[in-house]
Length: 185
Image 1 (spheres, rainbow, N blue to C red):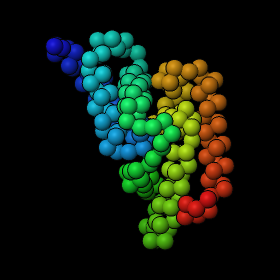
Image 2 (cartoon, one colour; image 1 turned 180 degrees about the horizontal axis):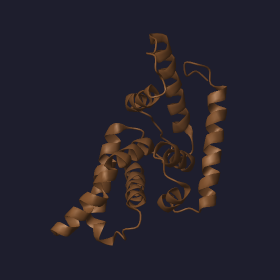
Image 3 (cartoon, rainbow, N blue to C red; image 1 turned 90 degrees about the vertical axis):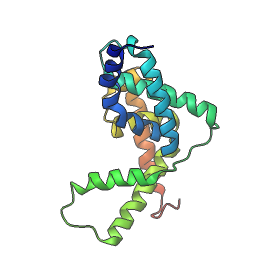
Image 4 (tube, rainbow, N blue to C red; image 1 turned 90 degrees about the horizontal axis):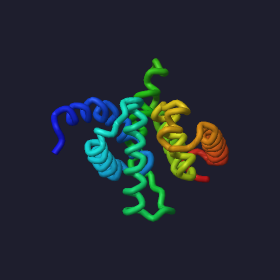
């Protein structure tokens, strides 16, 4: 059984990054309910391993655990070729709230529909990326990690992180550029 110091260390290290852990799990799994299972497993792993935390970069440590838990969970529960994006509503809400800061005037219903269609197209294009590219893109552009942190989380050199990010962005641009509005290719 763990003592109070370990419990408070877990609270200080893991809990502040819980929302980011959930977002990463959701991007990797493509589903809110699967992300909940993954984060629960990651929290358990972090709680058990808090004594081994070196105190350097808590965010990278937490996201590394989430990443490993996600791949373990996905390996047990999904075919490697199955990629789904179930919970677009949460992504759309986040994009809507982020976009609200840039827009002073209220959107028309038509503009709102177009924005939702564009969000779905982007979401689908991200979901189609190979896992290493999708993971790197999400860690950088959604989670806001820098190259060094992504390198720590994914255990690949910084040059590989930069290459994967560039390739992921290029594929997204190519994919979205070939899509017709409304999600039809």
